[in-house]
Image (tube, rainbow, N blue to C red; front, side, top):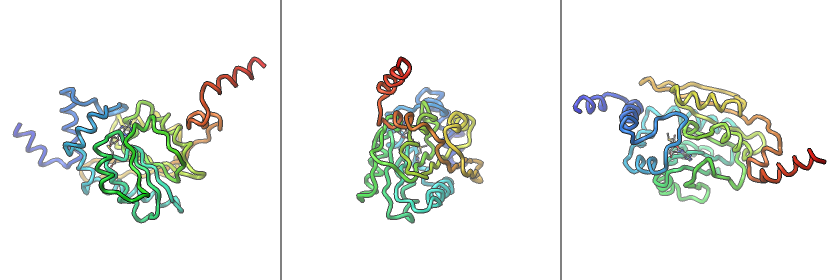
Length: 246
Ligand SMILES: C[S@@+](CC[C@H](N)C(=O)[O-])C[C@H]1O[C@@H](n2cnc3c(N)ncnc32)[C@H](O)[C@@H]1O
């Protein structure tokens, strides 16, 4: 136990948390990281215990800076949707873009509550919801997926569905931690976007992330309408049956 505590003092926060994750997976308190859903209760508990506070440490700074840079590179950005926004740390990095309309969505009520306490202005909204069922009521210039893609059951479906909520020439910014499981999630979903630029950030501790600026691939307007909820799958299949029979 002393050795574990000593290790915790020496290791930088991200590696320390990974070691803790492994222990929690071994004790079956948490599913292994990868293409894996983590229940809302686990996220709430972890945010309440301060397990994710290290995201605000200097080791993570370059990741937020590059993501914010990609958002700004877009030009006239007036709206950003941040999927899996956690406690809203990225929102701070978007200050130079003011005035913008920002929506952050996260599964954890605890994280969303913290974000709402920090951001009380009318142009910052925080929604406690599962991204896989969340349907926006407007389009955005930029949609960010910052360290969340590998928690979805179906990451490629999420990317395809949200592409329908991008303004014309809108962009996706996707950050994926460099670990075999997380890379696998990107491998599964990369076909649904067209990559415009990519940067790898490596902190001196050895932790690294791949951050990508993407645009959606062209999808048939009918499929886009279905995925965005504008047309029901039932009416599409009725229509296809009519065409086939007729
Ligand atoms: C590693 S944290 C990253 C938080 C934030 N993007 C950041 O970098 O500061 C992953 C976040 O994704 C959220 N999350 C995981 N699965 C989700 C889902 N299905 N829908 C919405 N949020 C989800 C978690 O609650 C958590 O806040």
